[in-house]
Length: 237
Image (cartoon, rainbow, N blue to C red):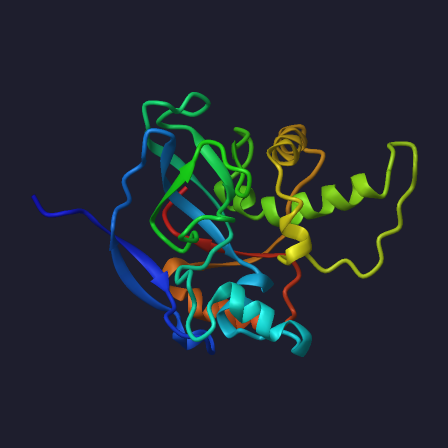
């Protein structure tokens, strides 16, 4: 029987948005502790753009290339945050089941979320995963984790309490950096899920692109004028 193939967007060299191209991979098989997710949405962040172009400040250029790949990218499928539906679970998975709508991040995984399907461990120190509140769309869910967790982490570090007033200067959307990645904690995503359900927070979406237009989405983000998340629609809601 022929193996089922899935579409992915990958890059095999650093460069402009045109290095991103559609390709195919065998659909991943979840292990006993993993979950197979059919992705509905992902995003293009400034971090994705920087990783694709290898556009690092001089001081961080060599360390950045050592982490990402000295001559070519080690992780050839980008995409840091996602939302989708669980379609298969390993027999040791306890918290999720087939049909659950979930969202999270791909930090520490071999592949990113520019793909039709992705395998994610139920629990891992680097990436995070949670169920999407019923009142939240896949687009809004995918636009939440990176910026939401980074903002929550900074608010907690600043000891911001409910009775205080906070002035935010120069707000410009989410970020992906070494510092923000440390903010990825399941308890943060669970808190964001609670606030999303209660409609206390809502992610701002600038625009959306179809899956085959990821190069154009990268070009748009690279201009530096986006005013919210840039969402990629992989499959229908």
